[in-house]
Length: 310
Image (cartoon, rainbow, N blue to C red; front, top):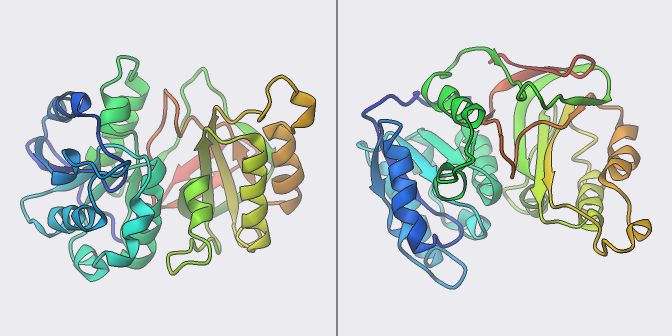
């Protein structure tokens, strides 16, 4: 697995959206947030475009991705936001072009579709990180989140280090044991949407990270059950669970008519017997850690330790 060259001050970032349209009032603050890191910004056409809920047509979003990977003056690519749409362009992407130009590629949520494809089809590490128009510009973007992001994209090209929560947010053990493997995954909805496609996630011997937002507990149950029935959870070496933001009962007034996430995890995931750590500060939350998808990790669920090693 190729680890792209770490960024440094003075490097140039290509800013794109392969997914949802960017609210116009958020574009300049997003650019400014990147420039504060000492990076230059080339703004893709998709940051200005709208096609309904998408950041321009499929063809435009594909062209922006290709342009940023193909341009030797672009050192890294940040997705300005998530939303919906990355899955729609997978079949049009030139993976040979992308494979020939591995670069820092950062984002999360809907960007999970691209992380899976680039890890599996292009063979390079990508970065599950907060994004310029959704987190960078928020006043509550805290030091932990900034430092985790900067450490990952500007320092840890191949260094070994531990993934640690903020000191006041302990992880928890759902299943004891240890495991090692390539770190994969991201947003549960996008991981599940890959099933049955040429871009289906390969979980064999991997450490699978999952998180989500705004899904009812019933839908989380359905998606985890689908992954289980597809054999994807039987194949993993270990599981990491992040934030489940606003994943609540469909009818909050009748909680007895739902199952808590903890119950769902206990009934679907725990019986698998795979080492499992929950409550990673990662996902649609602040503070949030950044993850190197595609790198090798060792997890010690007994002591809630996750070591990035390769």
